Image 1 (cartoon, rainbow, N blue to C red):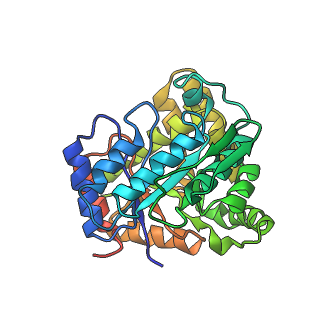
Image 2 (tube, helix red, strand yellow):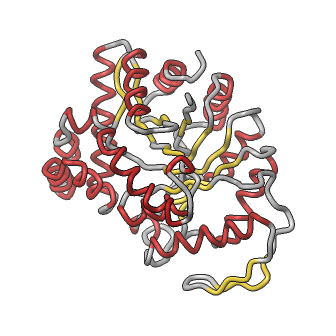
Length: 336
């Protein structure tokens, strides 16, 4: 399997015309799916609907939408509508997000993320199947909700962004795909064992769960530009470790980079962004990103596949130029 996805952030610094051009290029080159997230920028579904109207084959995926800002019934209706518009190309990528986004932006309590995700997926599965949803749970109580416009796909894929052991087990139990961020190549096989244990609970095995990590990519044949790309990647990593709560700090710590993660967090707390980025070592960087000339990048992606990745999802550090994105998309395309 040589599938690869592409993720583009829907921030306002990328125009509609640029997003459309990138999605059409990816569609022409045989990319499996186009993923977009949402936090403080534009919502994912409007962007994906726009792309659906300008592409033919590439699948359209939320990567991710959170489990707090919409009710599960509304999210089921929205993803079903995208599936109908795209003629069966939608993928639902879910995640709990974090306290910074959920409470700081949406103004709702960030409580019980694991239990909420389980209940959320159960309701969405029922709703998308077209059966009446009668649900009396901890977070939602529903009576005779039924969708009258079901999706095209009989089983619309649901991917979960998870990092911690319990969430990984839940992903293996309930999801069609796993969508981690900053996944250490050396730890993929160990993490898949946790997925496998969860899959066994529901009578499945790990082959039923697509392993689809986001991989930060930067391709260039110019050494000076590659040095700039490494700076962008370090800055992006430092933001996640230092500024996005405990998830990514804990993930890097579990991957053997506890000292580096502490140094990043300390510098970030002091508002020294450069020092935070410089605390990320070459080994730390190389374990989670794809950086180099076109052949080096293809070789690195191959190593991720060998470690157990089914479908890498290529994305870019904040500050990457459009030229870099186009160059990288062409260099690592599944069909050249």
